[in-house]
Length: 325
Image (cartoon, rainbow, N blue to C red; front, side, top):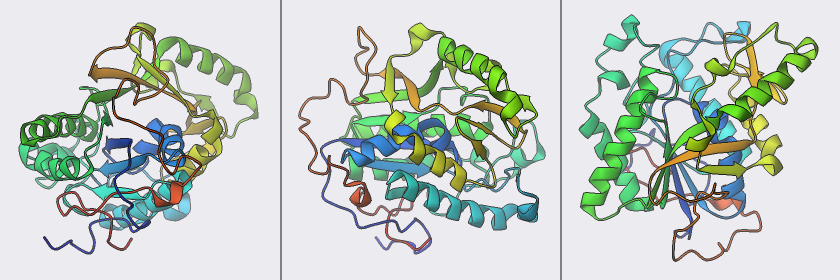
């Protein structure tokens, strides 16, 4: 099948299939860096194959810098695609896919807006059709771990909810086609961690470039601690995560260890990232590795930091590695 030239981000040559393979499914550029940036950087540096599938280009995002507020619609999507490429370079991730190819699914805007009615938006997509694009990637990459949002999309954004539906449906269809993903996780934040971080933020706020702070309720995926099964320590990759978030300059303002979105409300930048295992054998104690318990894994050849060559071979269905930015 011929690969559409605009379907992916050219970030490196794909190596042979890695021993550990992580797939993340996100709604817009920037979601991956906020939720999983430290995790992605850590596993990429350790030599795992890290594959990101982004469902839209975020054409409806609110732009922070005044000098870029002229960007809307397709122009904003093209700019955010470049931001995504820069963010992935910061994280050392080279296998980045755009679901169905660049621009196949548009940003749906916030829930309840007229943008939800756009027939080309992700919210209006047929889930099975969209999932079929993702199945191509799953059957090619054969990930042992899938990370996405919960059924509420973390905070109710229609594209996040739809990305969740597409990811889980694709996992089911891929299992029927011959590859069952052993472990599926949702992004989470333990309530106690969020509360402690916001207490520190309250003390630090006077020295930050943000006038007000968000609240625990504003953080997507906060749950009671006992629901969190996994904590990935990415503190060694804090600088990489912060750099990736800064690359998404239209959407994020960073003042480590905090950041703000377009609402200008400060919130913590977490470098230990948390997950809830929803498919797979639930551990008795909290895990520190998304691949814990998966058999047949040996140390990856690139575990000394061969981040620049992480990737996967092309797949037309999701917009695979091989096109120009």
